[in-house]
Image 1: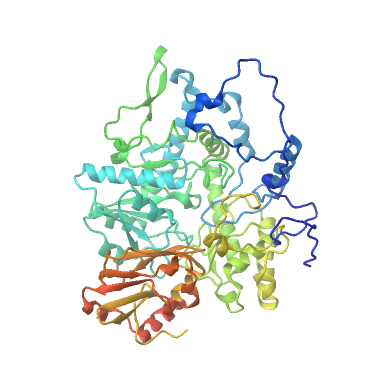
Image 2: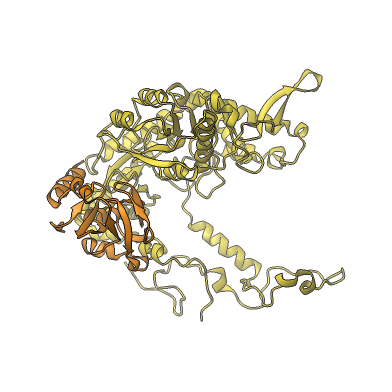
Length: 508
Length: 129
């Protein structure tokens, strides 16, 4: 298959093969002196002397920017855009990411002129429409989570974690002791310990029990008067619901510690169970996961933080409040006078375009639709589990929620690892699943189909995974050297990490 | 790969070889094979204090960043500078590639560590689950 059709004089490293269309050089490589994509009119104002005006900042040599014509630039980016894999092209089974479809109604609503062109400097009285949208989204999210107060400011999940733990810290400080430690299960997302550390806490690891859940005895032993909080993902990164969650909350609360919930896996809970009802004090949501706004380079994220009433005074400023306006009507107003607030965590009010899309999604589905979404997400994950568990090792047999975690134990006998299987999946037209996470599963394959996928698409995915399992036994080399159908063959990830080339440099 | 009988081991997969009052610390073959290709090692400075069971640094592989736990308490007397450019030595020869050397504060701590047989039994349990 590997026909060497590389064009003569190619400046590639030899990794790139000729594709039915063609390969694409960097803009810098395509550049030739004198090409322009624009033509400026003659100067009709007095010329300024840049050297005098800029002083030391005046550069002596021209910047080495690529020089190309407009059509070359357009073709370059258009070609690259056709290489992308996207949710609009096929399934994206990345576990713990909830790469669900971004419904077109979201885009339609967010492009309505008055919303698309809303400006954060507009006076409040002229921005009541957008503020009503923000207010309604806040109320919907509070209803879904069972919490009392919320901020939409954080720009994404990890930023939400940071904001949430700032609230935890501010509350403990108001009680006289910020406390020293945060407990984090060994199955957690890496952002959890990073958040705790950046907020000034020492991270204490909590070992999972045999079912992959929290070990209540270990928790009770580890929680003390210096424990600020437990950061818990529920369902866990194994896709398993913590069915002792209320007891976990009780153990923490008895010692004055708080329960933080990482809402990354909220897609398994919406409409079914509310974190506020099972003892969570503060949590973040990912609008770009659970609430169908673009995810993964497709748009900015959004990580609202919801909390119980006792944490409300510490929320970032400003907070949206409703007050009496003219003519007996109520008006929404940004309140800044919040003496206990942790302060602003983001410019303006958050990624407003995402609020509009998330609200469109919530309203388009309605309560029953959202509940159905959760059920379908869980059903799809369990369908995949059932159809693959005879070929792939299932390290935790606990019932799955919205994602399923296999291990490469049976394939490892043939020298094939989870990363190899994931790369082979590309040849079958699917985006890889999440590889080697959670860390408590050796060689993990973490698969989250979401509710977006039809039975037909799920069957295609299952067929691909079953075919790969056969290849692992019959022709393991084929899998170990995948992908074979891409423009660029397997990349040297180790070398890329050890000796990264971060910028283009002209040939010597 | 055999686990040297004269080393002692932690449940976090570090080994220590003791010569007089100096302990030499590295990570085990099991650790390097779980981590995969190591790309970076973050180590303390000579003179820094380390505490038994507490984090003294980290190893980064293409898969993950993992904390390094000190088998003993004491003061760092040497750091393996070669790892800056060739962290892959840990993958090639885990039991012969040291990360730090420590002047032991309390040699009695060594008794809490696992010997080679106990460590092998421990990792076979881990692989089972």
